[in-house]
Image 1 (cartoon, rainbow, N blue to C red):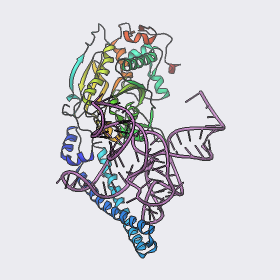
Image 2: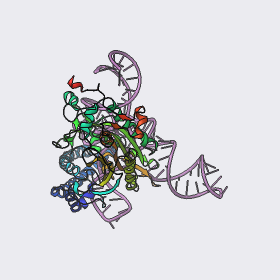
Image 3: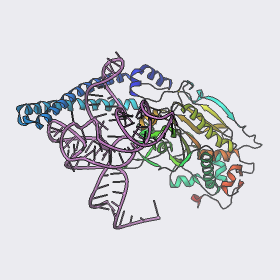
Image 4: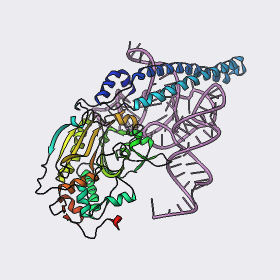
Length: 438
RNA sequence: GGAGAGGUGGCCGAGUGGUUGAUGGCACCUGCCUCGAAAGCAGGCAUACCUUCACGGGUAUCGGGGGUUCGAAUCCCCCCCUCUCCGCCA
């Protein structure tokens, strides 16, 4: 959420910004509602001042000898009338705020100056590449073939027990997912200074509002029936909201935390996209990185967090590139986002495996995340940054496709072998068949 | 799920209808003292909104929401959360 006063003073800029994001801003009502609201508040508060003064006088009279003077009854009667007037005005204020706030909540964050202007992912700017896509002496397979043939991925079984966009991993496939997560957590906690958190996977609506998923993106989420609980779409939600309504000591900044959690997305509106394989799932696992930063440091911290995520890909020796999302592709709450895209030989394309965003104070304002700093001891809104470090399911895909061998086996990256009991290669096992085929 | 106790400022903790936005302590800031520091002393120190060029003024906020009243941290109702005991349970 942007600052109300900022929007008021920069309405034209805000509308222009929304157009750069490819939106069609409808802020015409804003100015009038805002002015009306302020006028109502002024009237109401003036009346309240009258009432308070009258009440004080009643108290003074009642304490003294004039306890029963007619003046008291007179004051009480007139104040009661004022009270009714106030109630009317306050009702109007509530009503107008009920229309104003949703409007404010649908205004996205302001992209940083350095964000490329554009309308779609085609306008994203590639910043750098790392690693060289491997040359294959054979036609590399896609993970949905490789995984099924190796008996480590069972999509039919997933359809039977849950439905489309779910996966069942078996044997070395399940172990590979766990190894990747452990490796990522260990690297981030031991070398990058993050503290590991194990948060709830279900959160309340207040938390979803705090990080911006609600009210605008309810359709993308799963909600538990008859409760106020939602399945997290990313650990960003519980991790960032750990600091909701908290005043952090300035010396503690930046806060660096990480968590490995399941993530749940309804993927509404993504019909027809990535239907093959397990690129896009209703449930997947992700190691998330979150930094809560001092405003003066957040741009640097965003770069740092991105490098922390890149370090995983480098350690796994997976080729990737870094792109800066353009204004049209930028997420609602983000001021700037770097996507890490890993090379997938089975698809002959770079595909997103991490998204690292700086939200500035946009989330902090909603979630009320502050720090106390300086000699004045004043509080100010902190900045929040997060990124995947990495999406474990997609890393699993990248390992399979990049490390596949001509005989259909998959080599295990060196750094993962200790996490897989020394296993060096995943080979098809005759015994491993789809449970759904009985 | 049942019974009881409680939720007050960054933290601790007073306060049961009328100068209580809220005693006191801790933490923090400033000044005095000191060669310097500690201790001591004096002062300051919540947030949001409205208003003002500014100084300032005003309103609201004592878990959340509603109600009673001229007036609510204080009384009533609903909800949330924490703690203790019981029940259940991985």
